[in-house]
Image 1 (cartoon, rainbow, N blue to C red):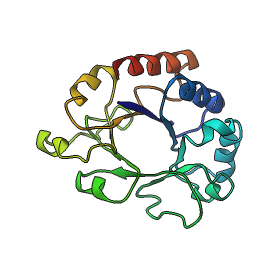
Image 2: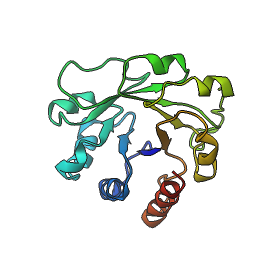
Image 3: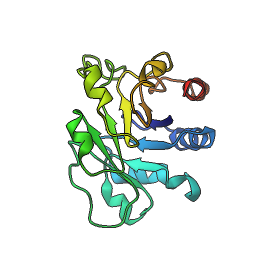
Image 4: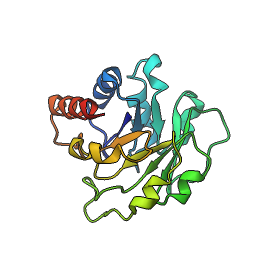
Length: 188
């Protein structure tokens, strides 16, 4: 299984450094999810990340940045439902039903698998049968994912897990973020 990390809603001043470290540790992709932020804020993060690591970044917003950074992936979601016409990296899709995972995308984020850590009140609704029917090789489990729950997910055909709340928030110390990711990687 692969590990995908989603950034917290508000950018951190040390975010680019943390992203580089996580990618070098073995995180497959980092999804830059900063709703409501201007393109300049995201650009400032992206330019601090070495070119060889940028191809493992996915934007959830500000798709116009793919004109400047065509290697960046994009995430189709409710805020940004259309794929840009210009060049870009892999396409991911935020999905809230198993049927949505069948739509065109290089990979999907299916949520919430468990009750969300970062969004209180966002509870899981998938049946065991639904999760067994997800397409192999393209779906990442998202929502309530922590290292203690990874063993439960291995019985389903998930490609990997996507985490946010189990890894970081604005108050999480950098060393704790790295430690949290290391522990999750051990479980995969």
